[in-house]
Length: 100
Image (cartoon, rainbow, N blue to C red; front, side, top):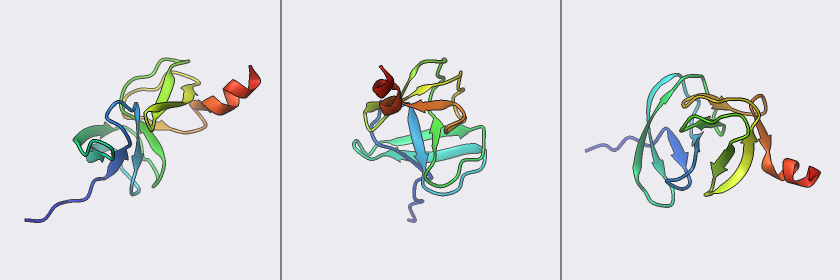
């Protein structure tokens, strides 16, 4: 029996974003969490390059972006589940915290 490698990874089951482990096209994808080893399915709305993030849930403007089980950013505008996440719709939490 052949096992297909995951197309995306999330670090913890509670993360709100996942990372592409190959260049991804829109459609239904199979992935896994690194820490828990659980399987995940996601429907991707946009192309996502290798190593980049996409949303696993809807985010309102100002919502926390959770990766590695911690807040790594803030949504700078509303982001739909399955959308590509990058500098056009996310601000780094570290940068935001340094401005306070």
